[in-house]
Image (cartoon, rainbow, N blue to C red):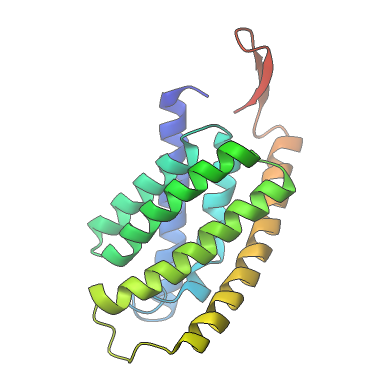
Length: 188
């Protein structure tokens, strides 16, 4: 995929994910603190949208571009705990996808689980320091339980993301084409 299209798709999926997160947050009556600081709510539709975006782009730097654009959106809206976690997790997902690919069930489930669980844990932890969450830091046991819940939820979101991405390819919404210089199939 050419760079211009990759940036465009990254922007579209990042904005869509951010809009979904904002909609979820507004249903909880707390734009900045409730759902944005609640990864259990935030790791649903917003995570699926980002994961499908990675599948649609299906190329290196796709996860990194999505992470950077998403981080910029959260920076604009003064949510630094999400900005930092998105950049860290985006770099990890970029490395993982280069080894595992972008569209198989195992790769989609793996990188969605890493993204969801990693971003959920890191953003929640950072929120305690950057936003001064007015409750005490949970004990280690609570973090373990919380991590397991986020991991299971992220796995489910990965499976859903894979099915959505596969549907887009099978129906031709996302096109496959051969590039003469590489002699292999690319997906747009």
